[in-house]
Image 1 (cartoon, rainbow, N blue to C red):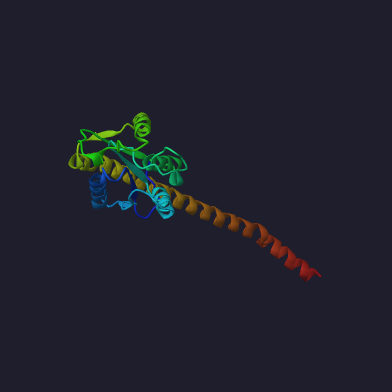
Image 2: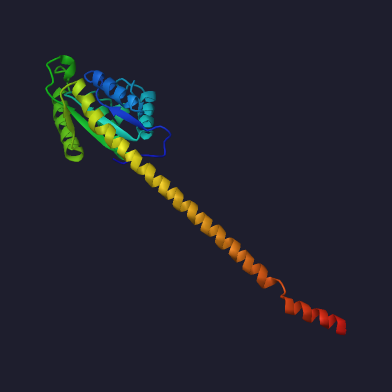
Length: 225
């Protein structure tokens, strides 16, 4: 995983539909925060205002990586937010993350129950279109990000604790070591440069000052006059 070491506090953005995966979002946030990571835009519900859009974009840009949770809902379609007639907010968030160069860690929920809130509304005029696009979106994620699968909140929390957190910590430690080594090399180069400067200045001083023989010659010349 590519870790951004330029932020004072490592952070993650959680992207998902909200109604069906609210508990999962909270569980992921809790695990991340427990391990010292900040969570951006956790409290954003289905985006509905321009301020929500700006907050989402800012949250993604300020994050080191994005955790993408996908259940069985395609989610809200808001053209004024996404600039697309059929693209869901989650898909739009995913694209923002790609544009910003953020690593994507994807998790697919399996064994989804029959609760209405866990699925798209069949009475929605866009229902059939949403199902087609949802399959397309999942295929994109599958092909590009090799998602992990989880059965419930506890399974998801366990997977993140056992795999994501160690991977993240390992990345941070590796980059920290490299940063220390780089600082040491910079310090050595600065010391060498300073030594060269002193040596150069000394040589210039010797070249520009008269030597003892020249001094005696000039003194004798003055006496002769």
